[in-house]
Image (cartoon, rainbow over all chains, first blue to last red; front, top):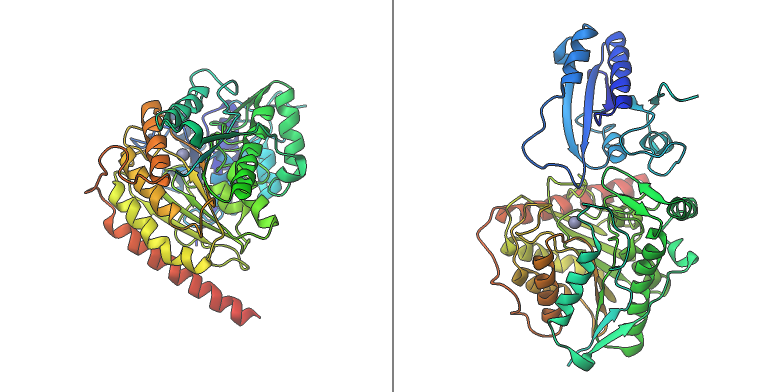
Length: 134
Length: 346
Ligand SMILES: [Zn+2]
């Protein structure tokens, strides 16, 4: 089985930074990167959202084989979607997330996907800090 | 005539975010559905009653309760991309959880009647330690845990169009609670497949019946009928319904195609699971089209009070006729495999 890691992507600046880190790690490890977008209760149900430009741009910029990067939209909240990704079909061995997503509250456990993930995940979690983090 | 026991605190005053579909007008619409029944003296209003800390702690982590309370008192904000809290939300959520307890206690004292708990925010996505999917506290779970603590056996029928992942997780390994859910799949929150059957102490106590987009009332009715043998074998002493009305064809958040009359049929089926009078209560979960919500509440309650033909014409002919038997078969096989694996391990 190919090694794989999952990056949580919600389109926020922190997610873009996490994407860059995840792709670089995957490139060095020869792993597949799954870029996971959580479609929430309020999300558009159809059609399937296309791959965001920043994803394809970062893949090109880092010189990755586009076939090693998979874009996937899953129903759920960001934390549950990433926790589920340790199972099939993603089988992530590492989770990569930004420090904060959209509408998060700094310093609070509540509402912080990164902190909740660290508390619950069965695989290592890489939390990519914001430039403003001390 | 059977009485309807309703909570006094409706959640129509607060917990609101501009443009969010989970809004106070939902509680008002549900109440209009009750008013449409013209029950007169047969309407019994109880409460308000706030859930006590120890009642919430039966299903929620102490740390989560502390944080949620502090978060709300600090002014609130977004808890996830779907879920908000305001400065009033803690109070309103604690009253919603308590409303269920007030209604159950009254039903128990009376020994008859049908319960309807108008709760906002809804509860079935809320996990032990996390808010999720518009939900802060898991109202139906707090109520079920209250009954279990008193020695009861509770079936939770969840016909909201979304899977009640929070309720499932909270009672995952609890043999005295049977969780039965019909829901659209795929759809938020992504869980609710038939292979999710409960933990090692509660194998077969979770029964998920996922249905494809476009499914009509006949398929959902068939799903509840198919669940009946599992429910009867469980011998519940109480029936709690996570009554979301977002499977209605007019609902903006999902793609099932039920009419209000279908909810009447579902209510009659769920009511049939009760061992006697005064042992069934509906808890409001989703439902975001106000007219559909009002009509579906009226039809469901009407059915439980004796008129199973209430509401719009029941629907049929949508996809998913084979989905129910396939899901049930997958559920049975998974329980069997896991049970024999358990046996081997011991
Ligand atoms: Zn719902």
